Each structure stands twice: as C-alpha cells, then as structure tokens.
Amino acid sequence: SDKQKRAVAELVEDFTVTPEMLKAIKTNFIESMGKGLERDGETLAMVTSYVMGRLDGSEVGSYLALDVGGTNLRVVSVHLNGGGQIATRQTKYRINENLKVGDAKSLFDFMAVCVDSFLDEHQIVVRGDSQIELGFTFSFPVLQTSINRGTLITWTKGFNASGMVGKDPVAFLQDAFNRRHLPVRVAALVNDTVGTLLAHAYNHPETCMGIILGTGCNGAYIEKMSNITKWKGETPAEEMIINMEFGAFDKERVVLPLTMFDNKMDRKSVNPNKQILEKMIAGMYLGEITRNVLLNLIDRRLLFEGNVSADLNQMWTFETAYMSTIEADNSPTLHATRKILESTLSFSSTTLNDRQVVKLIVELVGKRAARLSAAALAGILEHTGAWQQKAAIGIDGSLFEYYPSFDTDIMDGLEEVFGPEVRKNVSLGLAQDGSGVGAALCALLASKYS
Ligand code: ADP
Image (cartoon, rainbow, N blue to C red):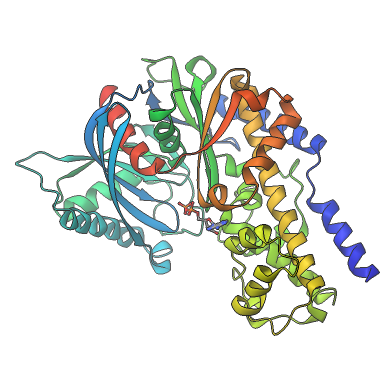
C-alpha cells in the first residue's frame, strides 16, 4: 500500500548513513580520541594497555588464557612454538545469566572452577612451586594501572555483577584461584581488542589495529607514546597499544543518527544511556532494534496485517543471527526468511510482501552498523596516518565473521573517506582467537617489561 511505502521510505531516511554523515562522525570521532589521550574520564576512555613493544613471531612458551566478556567463557592453553607456529586447546563454558548479575565472588569462583576443570581435562600438571602464567581477557571497560592490574569502570553487554565497579578484576580472579589452590598466576589483564591486535600481529607484522565486532564492539590500535599526553609512567618503548573503548562514543548524542527504535532499546537495556555507538553496531543489539522497527510497522497495521506472534512480542527474541540469514536470502520467495518468521518466530502466515519488508528493514539496520563501524575505523586510520601505508586490521567476532557484506560495506565506507587507494593499502582480516593466543602473547610481553 501507499501507506506502507511511505513508512518504509521514512525508515530508509532514518537509517541511512550518507557519505557526509559518515565523514562528520569520523571527524567527531578523531576529536574524541584526542580528548581521551589528554585525560582520563573522557567519552573515549583511550585506556593505556601497558602493552609495549612489537612481536616478530619468534616468541616461544606455554601459557593459559581465560576469556570472559561474551556469551561464553573460554579457557585456552597456548603453546607458542616460534616461527609464527601456535598450538592451542580450548574448552568453552556457558555463563549462566544468574551469574552475570549475581555477586562478583560467585562469578569469579565460577571462573576458577572452569580453569580447574580445564587443567584436569587436559591433564596439565605443574611441578613443584612453579606456576602457569595466565593472560586474563576481561572484555569490559577497565582503567588499567599496570599490565596485570586495573579497575572496572562499568559493566557492559548484559553483565552487572554486584560489588565490582571500581575494583580490580585480577585481584578477584587471583583470590579465586588461591582459594582453590590452583598453581596459576594472572600475568596480564588483557582487553579482547588488544589480544586481537597481538594475535593478528603474530602472523601479520603490519597489523595496526584490533577490532571486535561481536556481542559488543570496540577497538585497539598502536599509538605513539608522545601522543599519549596523559601518560605519566615510564616510557621504555616508543609505542603503546591503546584500548579505545569506542563503544561509548557520542555519549553526548551530538553526531550519531539515533532513531526512536534505538532509544526504546536503550531504555530497556541494563545500561541505559551508555555505550551509544556499541548499541547501534554490535550483535547483542541489532536484532532488538530490528524487532522494534517490525513492531512499529505491525502496530500501524502496515506489516503482517497488524498481527504479531507471541515470540516477537518478547524482548531479544529476534536474534542478530537471523539477520545474517535474511540478508543472505536471495531466493525469489524468500523461503529462508519465511522459515525464520513462521517456524522460529511462530507467525501463522506471512506474505511475500511482508517478507520483503522484513528483509529491507534488516538490510537497513545491518548496513547502518557496518557504516558506523567504517566511520570509527576511518577515524583511527586518519589519526594515525596508517591508511597511507600497508596496514592490516585484525577483526574478531561473529558479526564480522558471519554477517554478509559487513566487510565490503566497511571497505566502501573507507573508500568514501580516503579514496580508492585505501583498498590497496588497508586489509580487513578475520583474526580469530585474539583472546586466546593474543592473551598468551600479552602475558609474554608482560614479562619483558616488568
Ligand atoms: P563474543 O563477542 O561474545 O565473544 P561472538 O563474537 O560469537 O562472541 O559474538 C556473539 C554475538 O554475535 C551475539 O550477540 C550474536 O547475536 C551475534 N551473532 C552470532 N551469530 C551471528 C550470525 N550468524 N550473524 C550475525 N551475528 C551473529
């Protein structure tokens, strides 16, 4: 109907990031970076990671890594064999929702239980008084005070365990290990972005950035010490990795094109008014934004004849993974889309027109996420000048890995900012296991500079 066409046209308008908007966001992003490098407490935390020095792939040793901060908790054993050769073994454990929002001690005791059972399972034995060094990937905003010390600034991504903000997660973890008499020492506190950068660098020395596009979104890059004007510590190296915490970008809401659907989702989240950029980009949120748009059209009787399914009425039921499937559905009848709507979300029937509208909305929300990611990456590339040389960007996360055209949409955005030569210089690569291998490399670098 005409009414539906007008509604859709309005959505296109609201969700489109034009090249001009992308550049304006990029410019504002660079200003935010500058402020965060000057002092603590700015919108972009620009956390000094204490990770200095570069890798050359010759590093050797055996380490443990513990990865907390997403859907699963992972324990990984990492053997660096030199020559860029790595062997890893890992086990995943599901983090119960109650643990995420319970008391902190229970959460950290659970981590120790997982490490304990991992050591058993893989028959890792420690002789005498020696200890295994562990890199702890704790993917939340932490104000780092040394390579293995820091304080939690705020929880994100649905975690909200009590009594942790302002405290040191390493101390909590080491205490939990000690309570169980585990021969494990937390040698490094690692943000997943920093781990991703290091893991990618082990095989791609020209790596300048580590990016996460998964449950949440964030990035780390290599900065010149002389640009980190807030740094008061020693300067044994010329560069340090900065964990940007860029999911918090535009707290002031001056530049991001927020819609009423974003605001509705934000209000219902566990951290309203925080992580504004993350909520427009990351996997945890895209499905929910899409759901809000669908409900709006349904309530105006412009979709599914005004009928909603009980499933779609529930918050968070429209998974971001469905969006990947719907984006990839190029069948004439949109049968994969139909399957999601009718089998998974229990709509009794859908028309082709319904499914076409759903697909279009999914594409709008997905493309906006990719183009906002491009604005952030362009900001970092312009600030560092890295785009003018060969530069590798390591990216981890299911959103980047599985969402169709996320990478090409990002590249198109970068080209709008820098022109066609950026395609020759800058590569986006899937950097898996940043929180395993990367954390191990971080534990290794920790001993170099302490
Ligand atoms: P994490 O970031 O938690 O370590 P992932 O990188 O696997 O782990 O990201 C999980 C997030 O990715 C979830 O929010 C989920 O919605 C999203 N996701 C999972 N599968 C897909 C998919 N096929 N396409 C797009 N997003 C996905």
